[in-house]
Image (cartoon, rainbow, N blue to C red; front, side):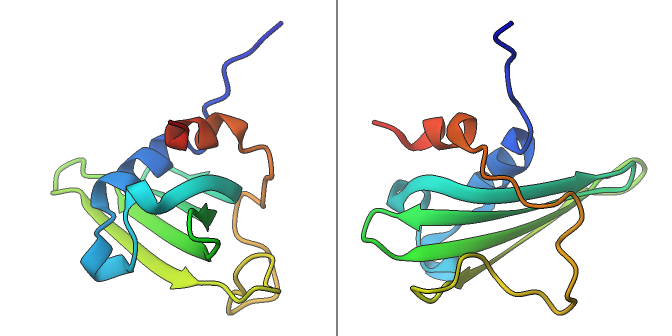
Length: 115
């Protein structure tokens, strides 16, 4: 059975909506593909991270946090950092992987950037 994969699509869509070239250092049109990602969500928030290959050969990490608004306004936070050439994915302040774990199954996400 060919199952539609959606893991990370919600978070990536919101991240691309908030992404700003002046603030983050690159825009949606600079992204070639998603290399790695992680997601985690509960009733109060959604979080995700995306390691991206940019069209100019650089790599970047986008960190996304979305607070769900039930009786309050929703809020988004997107932070970006550029990765060193030998850095597979970003380092975190703890030795543990991000909640949700890393996935390299990114074909469904990278479709957003194909011409």
